[in-house]
Amino acid sequence: MTVTSPAEPPGPATSRLPLALLAAYGVVWVLTAIKVFNRQDWLLENLLVFIAVPGFVLTYRRFRFSNLAYALLTVFFILHAYGAQHTYAETPLGNWVRDTLGHTRNHYDRAVHFLFGLLASPALWELLRRVAGLRGAWAYVGTVHVVMAWSGLYEIIEAVVAMLVSPELGAAYNGTQGDPWDAQKDSALAAAGAVIAMVLLAVRRRTNGER
Image 1 (cartoon, one colour):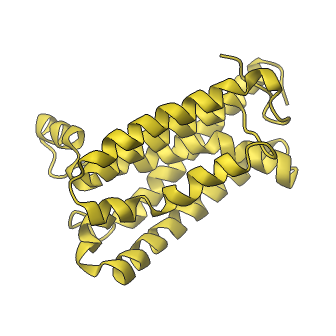
Image 2 (cartoon, rainbow, N blue to C red; image 1 turned 90 degrees about the vertical axis):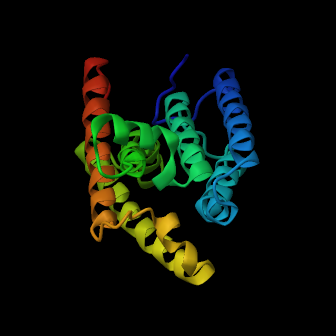
């Protein structure tokens, strides 16, 4: 797999991978949408997906991310599709880990918040470099700040949408599982994922002699 420079749009030869990733995600999304734990909760979970994925498609010709960024985003969206299918608090994988390790809650939602910071940060970093013109440490720090801001905003949007659209689904949609600090912990995990992603990216670029 060829990874193009994040500072410049990918060339024509690399355009097939994003299309293949989109097709793979589409297949997973359809399969996970056929039989869901709660259809109303599934719709709520997918509200932002209905905006984000078409947004990536419509802006592809004008603003293309690197293959690596598209691949990582695809992994995140697939994990989200699985969580939306079962509701994050009831995913079979999360329940299996909970029962195997003797935990008291399903931690799948926490894992995906962490992975959001880890997997989405490279794309955000590319966006800040190419649109805002940030370079060096500013690009890395800026990316972490954007992830923190978006995570906090998402938790607020999540709560407002649950109250306005379907208050009775609030607990399932928000996935708090009785933890009053759930939103703060989720945001902190996303920030931690972003920090790790930026450290790894900085090391990789330094090793390759890139700025």
